Length: 477
Image (cartoon, rainbow, N blue to C red; front, side):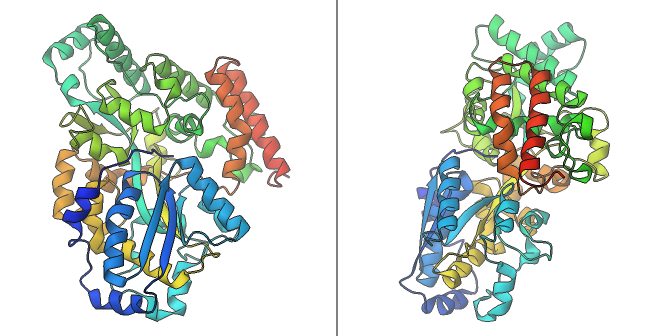
């Protein structure tokens, strides 16, 4: 899941306003004429990509069409709460809602969203010449139904990657000390054992040299879903535990006894590994969500860590917010034997492919005007500057934009990694019971983090709780 870091885009909005104006401006003015005076309302999480919509794309759209757009950016939990309550009550407050990749299946099951593909076919007058849903990357598939119709316009997509401090990894004295202590060269880890060894080394190095430096990040909040997501979406898959350990083909089993893997030996090894990293990470880690992990790394407090890609740009390039500008390397997460082979064969994945889309609630009172705005943010011509401001790519053409190619150099190849290796990552499993299973198991997970139950016993309890909830929901027969 994601991260609530704001970016100051006011100045950027002014400088980029002209560049986001589409070439076929006549369509936008003509199509928008009948809706002049309409104000669209949207709600989303306060993230760099969403703030770009609010500060840059919404004003540009209003200039092109006369339709005003007000985007409410708020916290992750408030964003969900407001959107779901509005759609459940059918109050029609919002014309656009942010749909994170992992919640789309629940929304589709409850018929919350307008079929965008069908709507544009039914009324061709609303179809923008520059909008083409075939231009989206394969990440758009997460927002389609079984018939292939699109229910959300992708607005951010990124992988959770392994960041490391190049200044530390390339420091001659540090390299010599690491070699002397371990007998190995100091390079980004390929295995969990290597990652642990590097983490232990840098935590000790920081202590020995009186530095505010630790060996790894850890998104390990003891009472926030961010820690649950870190384990099941980012750590467990690298050990070969996929889809949260729930096997839909085996009666939605979670426990090993019934064919699942939530409490398997691999899962238990993964949790012990992560808990150890938590213990040698910066002291703020037990209170860290996705937000604090990014700020911890940007503050220079960790030598390496798993960080959501949407934060990579400001961490690597914004000197006002980051102390490690110019010193950020990117790599794939460390993996257990066989995991890469599973990913390449389509049987598993190596980490989390996160992101979201803007959907149109069926309860909206301004569906036609909202469809125009969704196409506006989905066209190729606005993507390049957006990807530079916040490292998210949803359209295939964006990779070839000169500004993106130049930014890729500053990010040490992050966009190249996303393009070439994004297929090795995966979003959350297509479970409409996503929130229910998370809520049924998270309290036990927090007890593990607090030391109130052992990790092995806790995973056993979580697997049992997951199966009980799935039985209550009617999935387990």
